[in-house]
Image (cartoon, rainbow, N blue to C red):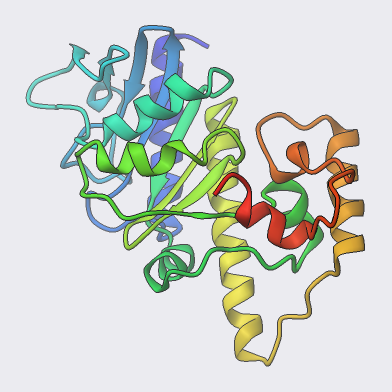
Length: 241
């Protein structure tokens, strides 16, 4: 893809996020890695549903502006994105949003750890909560950092959610899957559930993921089934706590 095509894809994904109610007003941000020292990112103070390619900024690995049109400037939360790229060389894109159900769990301090449907277990596993940090400071990158080696999505306490992948589309799909998982979990709780998979079924689903050789990080990458007295379900939340 050309740089212009990537900018257009960022705008398209921004519109999807906005249209699905995953952000309000000017919330959220998206970035894509071009090279080791060049990244495209959405600007601050702009609705993700109304962007065009000329809005997109280019920054270096420190988050400093390389190119920006007019008064457009990178999001103040670019530090969070840069930390992901620094610690996860496999990541090519980062998406930050405030999806309603997932963010509600983050505000309530409840990680998404209940194994309730095969797709969520295989694609996401557990989704931990990174401790609260003041936006635009190093507090959020520091909080997210310890989860980066083991997960491709995290909730941000009292803030929102962060997902990342080996392409912009994959990073977005993880955000969409995260919100769908959170919504199902919330609704099933209203109906007296959820009915959760037992550890044996979780192990089978983890094995399916490994057999698929899916990219990214996941609790299944760490849980090989050979840990003594390992409780698979709680293992993914307690992993490297």
